[in-house]
Image (cartoon, rainbow, N blue to C red):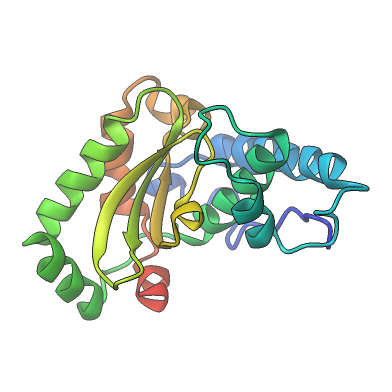
Length: 198
């Protein structure tokens, strides 16, 4: 199955009041994500990965011994990351009680979770992602990954992820990554989606 650019689950301007502008989504979804799709399709053509699900390609091409990953991995992983990222955001919504309870149990409080998540994203040198994951034993953890690496590579379930590549925030926040992360947690998270994955 070829990679396909999924439509956004909302209009390009739906998150503008919550801090992610129409211009950001036009660049990030329509140009950056589309490039991962197009490049990924070109790279897997006539290889053993042609026709495979993106999750299988990500797990099968990840090289844990390398910092620089293959082109197939990078594009497949970033396609998966962004497909999830769009669903992990929504116009501002309340946090369901089951998510609040799980975060309190794992981190002590929702504020402490946000502090750890922001620190992970803010402390990621260069490009990458911050994640809330459920590990194979069911424990909730905050992690960070470089470049396009994601929780699939480590057998974890991604409950929430935030893109900290500059193209995700530079139009709206310039170089203020901490402010972008705080705004993401306070105003952009689709907590219903997190609850469904929990």
